Amino acid sequence: MDNSDKQYHQIAQLTTAQSDAPLDRIGYGSCGSIWADSSLFPYIDIYGCNSSSTEPITSVGEEAVFPIVLKRADGLPDRSLTNEAVIHRHILSTLDKFNSDNQQCSASSPAGPRLDGGGNIFTDGHVVNIPRHVAFFEPSAPMWNQILPRLPSDSTTCQALVSERILPLPRDSRALLANKFWDGPAHLRENIVNDKRNEHCLVRPYLGRRRCRNLKAGTQRTTEEEGDENKVMVDERPGHLRLKTRGLISLRNYPLHVDQIEELVLPAGEYAAAMADALAFLLWGCEVDACDVEFVLARPRPQDSLAHDMASIGTRKFSTSNLGPHALWILDFDCCKPLSMTMEGVYLAAERFWRNDPYYPTPTSTSGTSGDASNNNLKNKTGNDEFLWKIFKGLFLEVSTRIMDWKLETKTAAWKSDGQVEGTYGGQARQQKLLPVEFIKRVEETVGVYSKGIPIFFSSS
Image (cartoon, rainbow, N blue to C red; front, side):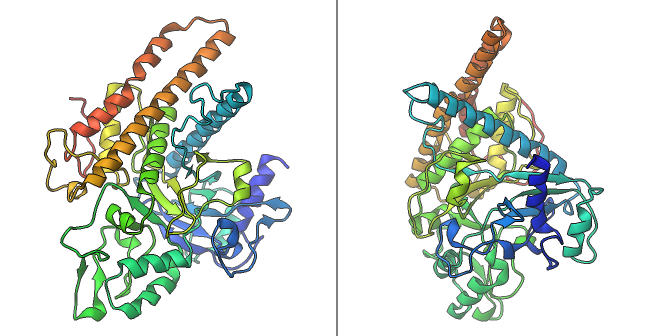
Protein backbone atom coordinates (compact mmCIF):
# COMPACT_ATOMS: atom_id res chain seq x y z
CA MET A 1 0.00 0.00 0.00
CA ASP A 2 1.56 3.34 -1.08
CA ASN A 3 1.55 6.52 0.99
CA SER A 4 -1.52 8.01 -0.70
CA ASP A 5 -3.55 4.88 0.09
CA LYS A 6 -2.35 4.91 3.70
CA GLN A 7 -3.27 8.58 3.96
CA TYR A 8 -6.75 7.87 2.63
CA HIS A 9 -7.28 5.07 5.16
CA GLN A 10 -6.31 7.42 7.97
CA ILE A 11 -8.55 10.26 6.77
CA ALA A 12 -11.47 7.87 6.22
CA GLN A 13 -12.13 8.14 9.97
CA LEU A 14 -13.49 11.62 9.30
CA THR A 15 -15.57 10.87 6.20
CA THR A 16 -18.97 9.47 5.31
CA ALA A 17 -17.16 6.32 4.20
CA GLN A 18 -16.80 5.55 7.91
CA SER A 19 -20.02 7.00 9.33
CA ASP A 20 -22.76 9.57 8.78
CA ALA A 21 -22.70 10.56 12.45
CA PRO A 22 -21.59 14.13 13.21
CA LEU A 23 -17.98 14.68 14.16
CA ASP A 24 -17.31 15.93 17.68
CA ARG A 25 -15.88 19.40 18.17
CA ILE A 26 -13.25 18.61 20.78
CA GLY A 27 -11.55 21.98 20.92
CA TYR A 28 -11.21 25.49 19.58
CA GLY A 29 -8.03 27.52 19.38
CA SER A 30 -6.72 30.69 17.79
CA CYS A 31 -6.21 28.87 14.49
CA GLY A 32 -9.70 27.37 14.48
CA SER A 33 -11.91 24.47 15.48
CA ILE A 34 -10.76 20.89 16.08
CA TRP A 35 -12.90 17.86 15.15
CA ALA A 36 -12.70 14.10 15.66
CA ASP A 37 -14.79 10.94 15.66
CA SER A 38 -14.46 9.88 19.28
CA SER A 39 -16.60 6.78 18.76
CA LEU A 40 -13.79 5.10 16.80
CA PHE A 41 -11.36 5.37 19.70
CA PRO A 42 -13.19 5.12 23.00
CA TYR A 43 -11.15 5.79 26.09
CA ILE A 44 -9.58 2.39 26.19
CA ASP A 45 -7.20 -0.05 27.80
CA ILE A 46 -4.54 0.02 25.08
CA TYR A 47 -3.69 3.57 26.12
CA GLY A 48 -2.54 2.30 29.50
CA CYS A 49 -5.65 3.09 31.51
CA ASN A 50 -8.31 0.87 33.01
CA SER A 51 -11.65 1.07 31.26
CA SER A 52 -14.83 -0.92 31.00
CA SER A 53 -15.51 0.34 27.48
CA THR A 54 -15.68 -1.88 24.44
CA GLU A 55 -12.66 -2.87 22.39
CA PRO A 56 -11.34 -0.01 20.25
CA ILE A 57 -11.59 0.12 16.50
CA THR A 58 -7.98 0.17 15.31
CA SER A 59 -8.45 -0.30 11.58
CA VAL A 60 -10.42 1.13 8.71
CA GLY A 61 -10.67 -1.45 5.98
CA GLU A 62 -7.44 -3.44 6.11
CA GLU A 63 -5.14 -0.66 7.22
CA ALA A 64 -4.19 -0.14 10.87
CA VAL A 65 -4.88 3.42 11.95
CA PHE A 66 -4.26 5.77 14.83
CA PRO A 67 -6.75 8.39 16.07
CA ILE A 68 -6.72 11.67 14.14
CA VAL A 69 -8.14 15.18 14.36
CA LEU A 70 -9.18 17.73 11.77
CA LYS A 71 -8.01 21.26 12.52
CA ARG A 72 -9.99 23.79 10.45
CA ALA A 73 -8.67 27.26 9.57
CA ASP A 74 -11.79 29.04 10.85
CA GLY A 75 -10.11 31.01 13.64
CA LEU A 76 -8.19 34.28 13.77
CA PRO A 77 -7.15 35.67 10.37
CA ASP A 78 -3.55 36.28 11.46
CA ARG A 79 -2.95 32.59 12.23
CA SER A 80 -1.62 30.32 9.46
CA LEU A 81 -2.33 26.62 9.13
CA THR A 82 -0.07 26.62 6.08
CA ASN A 83 2.85 27.69 8.26
CA GLU A 84 1.90 25.12 10.90
CA ALA A 85 1.88 22.34 8.30
CA VAL A 86 5.30 23.37 6.97
CA ILE A 87 6.88 23.65 10.43
CA HIS A 88 5.21 20.44 11.67
CA ARG A 89 6.56 18.43 8.72
CA HIS A 90 10.00 19.99 9.13
CA ILE A 91 10.14 19.05 12.82
CA LEU A 92 9.07 15.46 12.11
CA SER A 93 11.54 15.15 9.23
CA THR A 94 14.39 16.40 11.43
CA LEU A 95 13.36 14.03 14.21
CA ASP A 96 13.24 11.10 11.79
CA LYS A 97 16.78 11.82 10.58
CA PHE A 98 17.92 12.39 14.14
CA ASN A 99 16.55 9.04 15.35
CA SER A 100 17.80 7.23 12.25
CA ASP A 101 21.35 8.52 12.73
CA ASN A 102 21.32 7.44 16.37
CA GLN A 103 20.07 3.95 15.54
CA GLN A 104 22.79 3.54 12.92
CA CYS A 105 25.41 4.66 15.41
CA SER A 106 24.09 2.21 18.01
CA ALA A 107 24.28 -0.64 15.52
CA SER A 108 27.79 0.19 14.36
CA SER A 109 29.39 0.98 17.71
CA PRO A 110 29.58 -1.37 20.73
CA ALA A 111 29.69 1.72 22.91
CA GLY A 112 26.43 3.09 21.52
CA PRO A 113 25.86 6.39 19.73
CA ARG A 114 28.98 8.43 19.04
CA LEU A 115 27.59 11.47 20.85
CA ASP A 116 26.18 9.94 23.98
CA GLY A 117 27.66 6.51 24.56
CA GLY A 118 24.58 5.69 26.60
CA GLY A 119 21.83 5.07 24.07
CA ASN A 120 20.37 8.47 23.26
CA ILE A 121 21.44 12.03 22.59
CA PHE A 122 18.66 13.18 24.90
CA THR A 123 20.39 12.96 28.23
CA ASP A 124 17.40 12.17 30.44
CA GLY A 125 15.37 10.60 27.69
CA HIS A 126 11.80 11.01 28.99
CA VAL A 127 9.23 10.75 26.23
CA VAL A 128 7.89 13.86 24.55
CA ASN A 129 5.44 12.88 21.83
CA ILE A 130 4.90 14.93 18.68
CA PRO A 131 1.60 14.28 16.87
CA ARG A 132 2.13 12.55 13.53
CA HIS A 133 1.25 14.58 10.44
CA VAL A 134 -1.32 13.03 8.09
CA ALA A 135 -2.43 15.60 5.51
CA PHE A 136 -2.98 19.26 4.69
CA PHE A 137 -6.12 20.27 2.76
CA GLU A 138 -6.81 23.29 0.62
CA PRO A 139 -10.44 24.44 0.27
CA SER A 140 -10.59 22.79 -3.16
CA ALA A 141 -9.61 19.31 -1.89
CA PRO A 142 -12.06 16.59 -3.10
CA MET A 143 -12.01 15.02 0.37
CA TRP A 144 -14.24 17.82 1.63
CA ASN A 145 -17.16 16.23 -0.21
CA GLN A 146 -17.02 13.35 2.27
CA ILE A 147 -16.17 15.41 5.36
CA LEU A 148 -18.58 18.37 5.19
CA PRO A 149 -21.70 16.19 5.66
CA ARG A 150 -20.35 15.29 9.13
CA LEU A 151 -19.82 18.94 10.14
CA PRO A 152 -22.48 21.52 11.10
CA SER A 153 -24.70 22.52 8.20
CA ASP A 154 -23.25 26.03 7.92
CA SER A 155 -19.67 24.74 7.53
CA THR A 156 -17.74 25.56 4.38
CA THR A 157 -14.50 24.28 2.90
CA CYS A 158 -11.29 25.87 4.15
CA GLN A 159 -7.69 25.00 4.77
CA ALA A 160 -7.35 22.14 7.23
CA LEU A 161 -4.63 20.13 8.93
CA VAL A 162 -5.10 16.44 9.73
CA SER A 163 -2.81 14.99 12.39
CA GLU A 164 -2.64 12.39 15.12
CA ARG A 165 -5.08 12.97 17.94
CA ILE A 166 -3.75 13.45 21.45
CA LEU A 167 -6.10 11.28 23.48
CA PRO A 168 -7.39 12.90 26.68
CA LEU A 169 -6.89 11.78 30.24
CA PRO A 170 -9.48 9.29 31.55
CA ARG A 171 -12.34 9.83 33.95
CA ASP A 172 -10.28 8.90 37.01
CA SER A 173 -7.88 11.73 36.22
CA ARG A 174 -10.75 14.19 35.79
CA ALA A 175 -12.15 13.08 39.14
CA LEU A 176 -8.76 13.60 40.77
CA LEU A 177 -8.53 17.17 39.47
CA ALA A 178 -12.09 18.01 40.48
CA ASN A 179 -11.73 16.51 43.96
CA LYS A 180 -8.42 18.24 44.63
CA PHE A 181 -8.91 21.67 43.10
CA TRP A 182 -12.64 22.45 42.92
CA ASP A 183 -13.49 24.71 45.86
CA GLY A 184 -17.17 25.13 45.08
CA PRO A 185 -20.13 23.10 46.36
CA ALA A 186 -19.20 19.44 46.73
CA HIS A 187 -22.29 18.21 44.92
CA LEU A 188 -21.09 19.92 41.72
CA ARG A 189 -17.92 17.84 41.49
CA GLU A 190 -19.71 14.99 39.73
CA ASN A 191 -21.15 17.50 37.27
CA ILE A 192 -17.64 18.64 36.43
CA VAL A 193 -16.34 15.10 36.02
CA ASN A 194 -19.29 13.96 33.92
CA ASP A 195 -19.66 17.04 31.72
CA LYS A 196 -19.28 15.88 28.10
CA ARG A 197 -17.05 18.82 27.28
CA ASN A 198 -14.64 17.76 30.00
CA GLU A 199 -14.17 14.34 28.42
CA HIS A 200 -11.61 16.09 26.21
CA CYS A 201 -9.35 16.70 29.20
CA LEU A 202 -5.77 17.74 28.51
CA VAL A 203 -3.57 19.24 31.24
CA ARG A 204 -1.07 22.05 30.76
CA PRO A 205 1.86 21.59 33.18
CA TYR A 206 2.91 25.08 34.30
CA LEU A 207 6.33 24.55 35.87
CA GLY A 208 6.98 28.30 35.75
CA ARG A 209 4.10 29.54 37.87
CA ARG A 210 2.43 28.98 41.24
CA ARG A 211 -1.04 29.97 42.35
CA CYS A 212 -1.48 32.88 44.77
CA ARG A 213 0.02 32.29 48.21
CA ASN A 214 -2.98 33.69 50.08
CA LEU A 215 -5.09 30.70 49.06
CA LYS A 216 -5.26 27.60 51.18
CA ALA A 217 -3.94 24.36 49.71
CA GLY A 218 -6.27 22.68 47.26
CA THR A 219 -8.12 25.80 46.13
CA GLN A 220 -7.96 28.27 43.30
CA ARG A 221 -9.05 31.89 43.32
CA THR A 222 -12.81 32.22 42.98
CA THR A 223 -15.39 34.93 42.66
CA GLU A 224 -18.81 34.67 44.22
CA GLU A 225 -22.14 35.84 42.84
CA GLU A 226 -25.32 35.37 44.84
CA GLY A 227 -23.84 32.75 47.12
CA ASP A 228 -21.98 29.46 46.82
CA GLU A 229 -24.32 27.97 44.21
CA ASN A 230 -22.94 30.40 41.64
CA LYS A 231 -19.30 30.27 42.63
CA VAL A 232 -17.06 30.12 39.54
CA MET A 233 -13.34 29.74 38.95
CA VAL A 234 -11.27 32.73 37.87
CA ASP A 235 -9.59 31.34 34.77
CA GLU A 236 -6.85 33.07 32.78
CA ARG A 237 -7.44 30.97 29.67
CA PRO A 238 -9.15 32.53 26.62
CA GLY A 239 -12.92 32.59 26.83
CA HIS A 240 -13.39 29.67 24.43
CA LEU A 241 -11.63 27.38 26.93
CA ARG A 242 -13.93 28.22 29.83
CA LEU A 243 -17.28 26.62 30.48
CA LYS A 244 -19.99 29.25 30.68
CA THR A 245 -22.33 27.11 32.79
CA ARG A 246 -22.51 28.47 36.32
CA GLY A 247 -20.88 26.30 38.90
CA LEU A 248 -18.67 24.32 36.51
CA ILE A 249 -15.03 24.57 35.46
CA SER A 250 -13.41 23.48 32.23
CA LEU A 251 -10.90 20.64 32.27
CA ARG A 252 -9.94 21.26 28.65
CA ASN A 253 -6.36 22.52 28.60
CA TYR A 254 -6.53 22.66 32.38
CA PRO A 255 -3.66 24.79 33.79
CA LEU A 256 -1.86 22.73 36.44
CA HIS A 257 0.50 25.03 38.33
CA VAL A 258 3.69 23.78 39.90
CA ASP A 259 2.26 23.88 43.44
CA GLN A 260 -0.63 21.70 42.24
CA ILE A 261 1.87 19.36 40.58
CA GLU A 262 3.64 19.09 43.93
CA GLU A 263 0.36 18.50 45.76
CA LEU A 264 -0.46 15.62 43.40
CA VAL A 265 3.09 14.24 43.84
CA LEU A 266 3.67 14.32 40.09
CA PRO A 267 7.25 14.04 38.74
CA ALA A 268 7.94 17.74 38.20
CA GLY A 269 11.68 17.15 37.75
CA GLU A 270 11.02 14.62 34.98
CA TYR A 271 8.69 17.09 33.24
CA ALA A 272 11.42 19.75 33.46
CA ALA A 273 13.98 17.38 31.95
CA ALA A 274 11.63 16.40 29.12
CA MET A 275 10.87 20.04 28.32
CA ALA A 276 14.60 20.81 28.29
CA ASP A 277 15.16 18.07 25.70
CA ALA A 278 12.24 19.27 23.60
CA LEU A 279 13.21 22.94 23.60
CA ALA A 280 16.86 22.16 22.81
CA PHE A 281 15.74 19.97 19.90
CA LEU A 282 13.43 22.65 18.49
CA LEU A 283 15.93 25.52 18.80
CA TRP A 284 19.15 23.85 17.67
CA GLY A 285 18.09 20.64 15.92
CA CYS A 286 15.15 22.03 13.95
CA GLU A 287 16.30 25.67 14.05
CA VAL A 288 12.82 27.01 14.83
CA ASP A 289 12.04 29.57 17.52
CA ALA A 290 9.47 27.48 19.48
CA CYS A 291 7.13 30.48 19.54
CA ASP A 292 3.90 29.77 21.44
CA VAL A 293 4.27 25.98 21.39
CA GLU A 294 2.12 24.10 23.87
CA PHE A 295 2.91 21.20 26.21
CA VAL A 296 0.12 18.98 27.54
CA LEU A 297 -0.16 15.91 29.72
CA ALA A 298 -2.39 13.30 28.08
CA ARG A 299 -2.63 9.59 27.45
CA PRO A 300 0.47 7.84 26.14
CA ARG A 301 0.50 6.15 22.78
CA PRO A 302 -0.35 2.45 22.79
CA GLN A 303 2.72 0.28 23.19
CA ASP A 304 2.52 -1.24 19.72
CA SER A 305 2.75 2.17 18.09
CA LEU A 306 6.21 2.78 19.57
CA ALA A 307 7.81 0.12 17.42
CA HIS A 308 7.23 1.92 14.13
CA ASP A 309 6.73 5.42 12.80
CA MET A 310 7.74 6.80 16.19
CA ALA A 311 7.41 10.58 16.51
CA SER A 312 8.87 10.93 19.98
CA ILE A 313 11.81 12.53 21.72
CA GLY A 314 13.23 10.12 24.29
CA THR A 315 11.98 6.69 25.34
CA ARG A 316 11.60 6.66 29.15
CA LYS A 317 8.19 6.71 30.78
CA PHE A 318 7.35 9.07 33.60
CA SER A 319 7.26 7.69 37.12
CA THR A 320 3.97 6.20 38.25
CA SER A 321 1.78 8.87 39.81
CA ASN A 322 -1.69 9.69 41.06
CA LEU A 323 -2.56 10.89 37.56
CA GLY A 324 -2.14 7.39 36.16
CA PRO A 325 -0.16 6.51 33.01
CA HIS A 326 0.41 9.66 30.99
CA ALA A 327 2.82 11.27 28.56
CA LEU A 328 4.00 14.76 27.67
CA TRP A 329 3.02 16.00 24.21
CA ILE A 330 4.12 19.11 22.32
CA LEU A 331 1.84 20.74 19.76
CA ASP A 332 0.67 23.94 18.04
CA PHE A 333 3.46 25.09 15.74
CA ASP A 334 1.50 27.73 13.80
CA CYS A 335 3.39 30.67 15.35
CA CYS A 336 6.86 29.10 14.93
CA LYS A 337 9.36 30.63 12.53
CA PRO A 338 12.86 29.64 11.37
CA LEU A 339 15.54 30.66 13.87
CA SER A 340 18.85 32.11 12.73
CA MET A 341 21.90 30.53 14.35
CA THR A 342 23.22 33.93 15.44
CA MET A 343 23.16 36.11 18.53
CA GLU A 344 20.13 37.87 17.07
CA GLY A 345 18.41 34.48 16.98
CA VAL A 346 19.42 33.85 20.60
CA TYR A 347 17.83 37.13 21.72
CA LEU A 348 14.64 36.31 19.84
CA ALA A 349 14.48 32.77 21.24
CA ALA A 350 14.87 34.11 24.79
CA GLU A 351 12.02 36.53 24.20
CA ARG A 352 9.85 33.69 22.86
CA PHE A 353 10.73 31.70 26.00
CA TRP A 354 9.31 34.39 28.28
CA ARG A 355 6.28 35.24 26.15
CA ASN A 356 4.97 31.68 26.06
CA ASP A 357 2.60 30.26 28.67
CA PRO A 358 4.63 29.36 31.80
CA TYR A 359 5.42 25.74 30.90
CA TYR A 360 9.18 25.96 31.49
CA PRO A 361 10.82 26.35 34.89
CA THR A 362 12.15 29.88 35.19
CA PRO A 363 15.08 31.51 36.98
CA THR A 364 15.02 34.30 39.49
CA SER A 365 16.81 37.48 38.55
CA THR A 366 20.61 37.26 38.39
CA SER A 367 20.66 40.57 40.26
CA GLY A 368 18.96 38.93 43.22
CA THR A 369 15.58 40.64 42.67
CA SER A 370 12.39 39.04 41.47
CA GLY A 371 12.21 41.16 38.32
CA ASP A 372 9.10 43.06 37.29
CA ALA A 373 6.55 42.62 40.05
CA SER A 374 3.74 42.77 37.50
CA ASN A 375 4.85 39.50 35.94
CA ASN A 376 2.70 36.80 37.58
CA ASN A 377 5.15 34.06 36.58
CA LEU A 378 7.75 35.49 38.98
CA LYS A 379 5.59 35.66 42.09
CA ASN A 380 5.77 33.20 44.97
CA LYS A 381 9.05 31.58 43.93
CA THR A 382 10.37 28.87 46.26
CA GLY A 383 13.50 26.80 46.63
CA ASN A 384 11.87 24.02 44.66
CA ASP A 385 11.38 26.39 41.72
CA GLU A 386 15.10 27.11 41.76
CA PHE A 387 15.77 23.36 41.83
CA LEU A 388 13.53 22.81 38.79
CA TRP A 389 15.34 25.60 36.95
CA LYS A 390 18.70 23.96 37.72
CA ILE A 391 17.42 20.66 36.30
CA PHE A 392 16.08 22.38 33.20
CA LYS A 393 19.17 24.53 32.67
CA GLY A 394 21.68 21.73 33.17
CA LEU A 395 19.97 19.24 30.86
CA PHE A 396 19.17 21.90 28.28
CA LEU A 397 22.85 22.84 27.99
CA GLU A 398 23.98 19.21 27.94
CA VAL A 399 21.59 18.04 25.25
CA SER A 400 22.14 21.26 23.25
CA THR A 401 25.85 20.46 23.08
CA ARG A 402 25.08 16.95 21.85
CA ILE A 403 22.70 18.25 19.19
CA MET A 404 25.26 20.77 17.98
CA ASP A 405 27.87 17.99 17.82
CA TRP A 406 25.44 15.83 15.85
CA LYS A 407 24.88 18.61 13.32
CA LEU A 408 28.62 19.20 12.91
CA GLU A 409 29.40 15.49 12.53
CA THR A 410 26.61 15.09 9.99
CA LYS A 411 28.06 17.92 7.91
CA THR A 412 31.60 16.61 8.33
CA ALA A 413 30.58 13.16 7.11
CA ALA A 414 28.93 14.73 4.06
CA TRP A 415 32.06 16.71 3.25
CA LYS A 416 34.31 13.68 3.55
CA SER A 417 32.05 11.51 1.38
CA ASP A 418 32.17 14.18 -1.33
CA GLY A 419 35.92 14.59 -1.00
CA GLN A 420 35.51 18.20 0.09
CA VAL A 421 37.35 20.23 2.68
CA GLU A 422 35.52 21.55 5.71
CA GLY A 423 35.17 25.09 4.40
CA THR A 424 33.75 27.99 6.34
CA TYR A 425 30.80 26.03 7.78
CA GLY A 426 33.04 24.16 10.20
CA GLY A 427 34.14 27.38 11.85
CA GLN A 428 30.57 28.67 11.93
CA ALA A 429 29.34 25.43 13.49
CA ARG A 430 31.94 25.64 16.22
CA GLN A 431 30.87 29.20 16.96
CA GLN A 432 27.24 28.09 17.01
CA LYS A 433 28.06 25.67 19.83
CA LEU A 434 28.27 28.73 22.08
CA LEU A 435 24.69 29.79 21.35
CA PRO A 436 22.94 27.57 23.95
CA VAL A 437 25.05 29.10 26.73
CA GLU A 438 24.23 32.57 25.41
CA PHE A 439 20.54 31.66 25.28
CA ILE A 440 20.46 30.62 28.95
CA LYS A 441 22.44 33.73 29.86
CA ARG A 442 19.93 35.91 28.02
CA VAL A 443 16.97 34.19 29.70
CA GLU A 444 18.51 34.82 33.12
CA GLU A 445 19.29 38.45 32.24
CA THR A 446 15.74 39.20 31.11
CA VAL A 447 13.79 37.99 34.14
CA GLY A 448 10.67 40.14 34.41
CA VAL A 449 11.31 42.03 31.16
CA TYR A 450 8.71 40.39 28.92
CA SER A 451 5.03 39.70 29.47
CA LYS A 452 2.88 37.30 27.52
CA GLY A 453 0.55 38.84 24.96
CA ILE A 454 2.51 42.03 24.20
CA PRO A 455 3.43 42.40 20.49
CA ILE A 456 7.02 41.45 19.81
CA PHE A 457 9.26 44.09 18.25
CA PHE A 458 12.69 42.51 18.11
CA SER A 459 15.79 44.57 18.69
CA SER A 460 19.31 43.27 19.10
CA SER A 461 20.25 46.22 21.26
